[in-house]
Length: 451
Image (tube, rainbow, N blue to C red):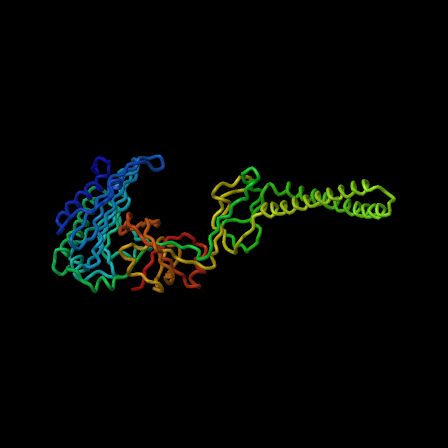
């Protein structure tokens, strides 16, 4: 299925064709395996038709060439292209993205981004020699834009002429990359691979427990309704603090008072009967009364003792139900999320999530190809991808997961490898930095590991 058949914007379609033409000029170009189910995807999202096409190649010096075109309904249209360099080669990352909707291109970006903090000198010379093409609407880079080179172009093409101008910029950058791949200087260089820093996307999580608190199950298997909720999202709570109560509590309290009254009555009856039975026992020993009268009283005594034991067991069970008719915090922490409101019967999501946010950690999703360069105790710097906090956070690797899995944190920049598999790396934040972000659970991060 071609991009044109998908109804892609003319700029998206034209640029995709130019990119395909440019990668045909790369040395040792070959196919890269892709799951047939991912090569052409069609479905629906929020009630609109979704079409995605993924094309993968590889060449000498570039481990992965990824071109993705997509359309959602009659509006959103996207081109996403990334050329990932082989770590053995001192080459930049090529990235180009277009976001269009209903005939208008809202964003177009292209860059040759540095891998190790700055572009190699041959790349700088070639980029400096390129013609400077102007656009009427230059866009401002987001805070995470530090990953780009000084030569990045982030624009909003105003008309068809500027769309052609943007294609020319992309071709300029691709020709620079192709020239570098073709030169002998682009041969594998082991020192580059050993000194290359590792970067990854991640998120903030509490280093302690995150508890999902549920309602108790009733005798019929259903949860009681929530009668009152005493906290809000973001509230700090202490262990044992009352968080909520359920609508079965008033009935349980009434049953408790009835049982307490019954137990008191049974105790009085038992005391009187024990005294009376003792008197008849003495009379029977002297032959004043028959043994049948004594037997009747001892049988009543056993029955009262049984009733009292049963009432006490019912009161003990009721006390347990009363404890469960209130929701108390099992740990000190912060209310992260509320899933049920007063009057509702909580479902499988429970009532609320409570996190021990006094200690925070970062979870970085490191590419499986990079995990060999991450180690326990390694330091890292963390920045917010979308400006959730200012400056950097300091952290240290405390655990590396033993399993490779599909990534959960999706990239918003043109160097993001959407179909990569990753290893989760957990990093403990410095206490002072953890205090700054303890109310930002789930915040997306960019993690840079120190070599």
